[in-house]
Length: 465
Image 1 (cartoon, rainbow, N blue to C red):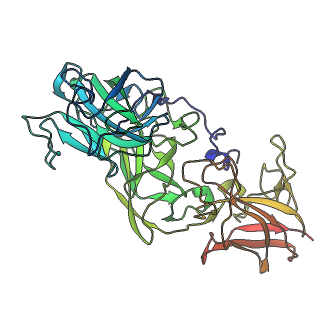
Image 2: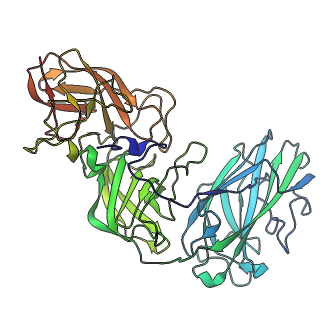
Image 3: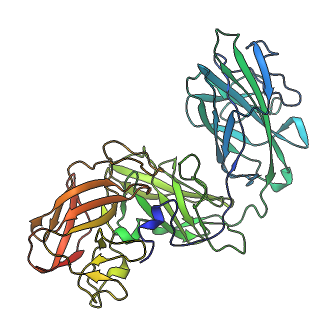
């Protein structure tokens, strides 16, 4: 059972494997009321906002105070939409930016792909200065520009870009101009320029991913239920879910965190839940393990999609609830008679010698000690929902948190819970420190309940007296 808890920890793994590291490239922002005019990126054929009169200040090429997360690294996958996150480190009061994508073979008028705003903080205009219509920019003004919609006090913007659909398009240049401004406008501006070159990914395309019917479940080691919730862990099963290189059977998220946030793209596989990017821990051709993002709809069906270089899967509809609790009880903790036991660990366990609660010899290959009333145990879960304080999905908490209203029963006896919250340094994993109550010796069903929703049935803990 090694790693059944640890798969959610950013530094510990059931599996190991190579994966494509995310390339961080400096990027920039700027601040001009209602966005900058078109062709203000400093690209060939463009001006900058200094020249067009929207700002007065200094110009810096390749600024060292800028950061970008581009999900595709040094490559783009033809036709596959991916996200940019841009950030500037500065003491400015207002920020903004403009970006454009051009074919390297035609950097002035060679439009390359299409931008997609992720919030009202950005919008897209065409080369004629008009907002891009639903049908796309006209042939007479094909180049797109994504820009801020108003000066922002945030130093971070996000948007998506869909590259050209064919590898024949060749390399693409992304040109960006940006401003960090202390005003009063239009003076006091620091205008920055940056360009990056993206090659079409080798072996792009491939088969379109397919999610199996009923192929989205909560993590199987935690009950495998069909209901999901924000922050819970789910497993997605199907075909062609990861277009991995021939010498790689799988990919794991390992070192691909960015500023403490888990990746939403792993080996060019992405997953959306209710249209929001999920955090991906594991990918192979038949399975993807992800943490559900925050902000999904609850109390109604939501769509799950897998996106690869082969395209976007048909959506699978699943039920979403505020909480979908499950406790760690994997097949490895079943007895010879098929009785399912919970994974409960004594706190005196060490990394080298782990001691689990249960009747010695009842589960093959597992070091067990019989717990008695008054003993302290640690149990893990997923899907227990919101905590106080709130911890964002995709991050490993550095502080203690609390799940309000958790109740635990062992048999018919209420259980004292000394801690019920997210486990430190693990993503989306809940930890429960409990005290074994005075309960009849033998196998007793253990059930956790929160907001009237209970964990999976027929999970047992064996106790002595």
